[in-house]
Length: 354
Image (cartoon, rainbow, N blue to C red):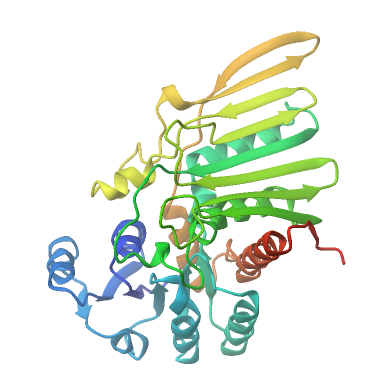
């Protein structure tokens, strides 16, 4: 009989409240047991939504607790490495929020430590279960576009002011939207196409007073394929989320996966048969030449499934399945970010084959 996994959640801010706690509690076999909740409003929210979870003032109350099997690190990026290392050394399985670490050398160290301790280590690349990405993946695998020559993906926001006391917008290691939103797009691209041959990047601070990167463009070079990844904080009029161009036609997708908005609204995926379902209005458009005829259709979006990540974590810990998000893959994302920063600093394309 598979055992219940007691989860200790470090970080009950935006990531913990929105992306982790409600999803963890929707998965059979996972028990949200201890949660860091230092501020009174966090403790109140925790008691309201998850009355069975024990509040903790200090991370040591989770990392050192004998009754915690799995530690989830949902903190600011700068402490991912130290907290993950401490949890692994204590013999805990670990899920760490993306980005994995600030530099790839830290990721390599944690991967080696997890192997030494024989513990599961994975990174929360939940965008692999976005409805739009799953739909794009299905379209590519269908082969209906013919040979793909250009792949464009964007992750945009519009916020023309800076948030006060927000670490993501401060001049700190691991801050800025390349580490935040860009990590998702890089991971998706690696899953679709593997590691690129070369990287070229344009990284900007465009808003008045910006201290961290708030606009990025990465070109990933593949044989006969160009991958363009973009993200910005000053995009008032949205562009396509994905635009795919092949020898037989194009697939263009507007709109965004509905799961984040639903979680922010306090909804839970547990028992919701329509969870992750996109409205017809934002289905992607396929425009191709097929058998000598022009053909246009709107492709029904795949259902998004954030709980699939934690279901896989549960299965992997119990030996039922291998972990889908392997730490080596998340390390490769950090390596691409490092090379993107180097590309911008040196104003040149960086060849990964050298």
